[in-house]
Amino acid sequence: MKVIYDTEQTHLCPFSAKLIRETDSRYEKWFYDQEVTKYNSHGLFPYGREKMLDYIIMAESGEKDIVWAIVDNKSKEHIGNVSLQRINGINRSAEFAIVIGEKDFWGKGIAFEVLFALFEHAFKKLNIHRIWTGTAECNIGMIKTAEKLGMILEGRLNEAVYLNGRYEDVLCYAILEDEWTKMTKSLLQ
Image (cartoon, rainbow, N blue to C red; front, side):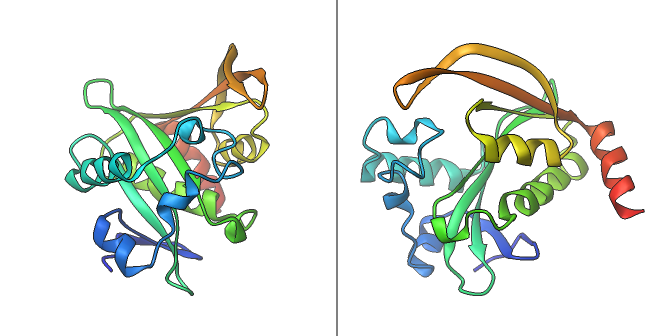
C-alpha cells in the first residue's frame, strides 16, 4: 500500500482497484447504505459495479480530481475516501468531498484530520487559493468540521436539495489560502 500522508489515525493512499482488493474494502456496499449516503446523492440511484469501476478508473488517472483512500492505520481497513474535485487551475480553486463509509469510525475526528492533510496538500503543493464545499443544513457533522477547519459560511442556497422527504437549504463554506495560513499558525502557537 502506497501511503501519501499519515495522520494520527489514518494512512491516506491513492484510491485504486488494487487498494480495494488489498484492504478487502466494502466500498461498493457503502453506496447502498442509506445511512452512509444520507447527505449526498450516492444513495439516490443504485451505485452498480459499472459505475463504481468507472469512478475508480477516473480516480486512478488523476486527471480531473485527487481521490485518496482513507485507511485505518491499525486495522489497515479502507474506511472512506476524500477528494479534491472541480480543480480549476485558472481560478486556483477546488471543492472537497469526503465519505467515511465504515460507521464504526464515525465521530472519532477522522474527517477533520484527513481534511487538514488534504488542505495542506492543496494550499502548499497545488497552489490552490480557495477550497470550498456545500452541505445540507441538516448535516451537522459536516458543518462542525468545516467550521473547525476555519471555513467561513459564504452563502445559502434555499431549498436546494431534497433529503428525507423535504427540501433542505445548502450551506456554502470556503477558506482562502491566507486564512488557512493564519489559522494553522495560531494552532502551532
